[in-house]
Image (cartoon, rainbow, N blue to C red; front, side, top):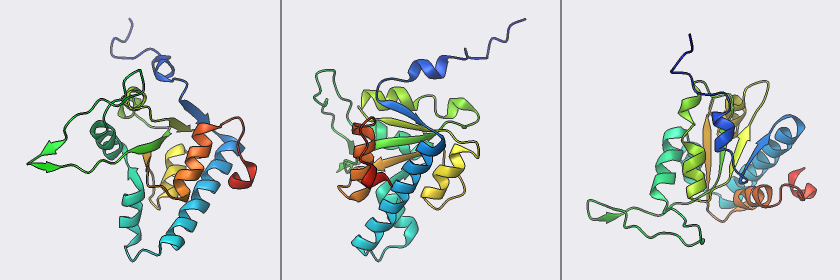
Length: 183
């Protein structure tokens, strides 16, 4: 008898579009090393007196719930490329507009339905996805970036710093990566 609650095996791959990519092995190691290096250089350049935890919150949306919240607050992009304007008013206060430049998702997430909504939500906002797959565990590798044990999803907030430059290079030109920036 067939299990009715089980989703088809290819349902996750159907969500994948041209703006998403998988990183694993040596390519993943280079990606994480370059992002980590840019995080450290940005922290020293900004010289912020904020505690590390708050600094990471300013630069990244950490966790599935926060990534989802930021994506939902971003206005959807129409097929012609213009954003559909919506008023974000809560208690007569404007919600600050924070945009995600890219989303890193651990492909070892269990159960899979925790992140199943992110590809469609990201594609409607034209935010590229980077899937992290590692033998050791993608969620462990993502957690190392933000000094946590694990992280299933991390959204890189558009702040105009060195972190955004390296993520922009990776998302924009995956075939012609600038090896000086990555190594």
